[in-house]
Image 1 (cartoon, one colour):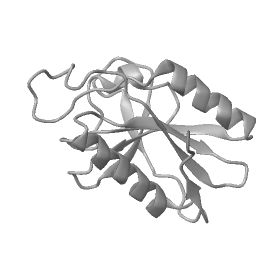
Image 2: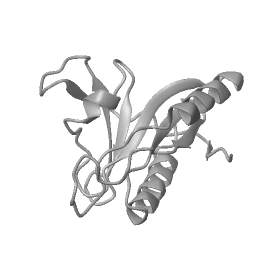
Image 3: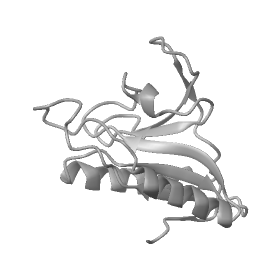
Length: 153
């Protein structure tokens, strides 16, 4: 990703919409052949607050497996590659939760967008381990992509 400002803006907007809908937002980031990155929202099929019943803010996500496969196939058809996954933490920090290791793919960065925290966007990589220190923060990628798009269904 070369335009961190555009990515941050799109992810924050999606995260704020998700707060209003009482659920976490999630999806993937695709690196296009042009060098641009595309934000692909994927529906969260987890019922609101299933991981924290009674909580004031949404907790938990599970990407719709059919929509995820469709997004990955569409990326491949365009010559894009999976660059990262992303999801929101509506009422907490952009630190990985204990549940995040179940959604992370080993070696694939994932971005956590926390609209109520500073910094609001952080990137992490899961080691594949189950220990409490199984995530390491990784730098947000680049800062000079000319455009960033969100595909329409």
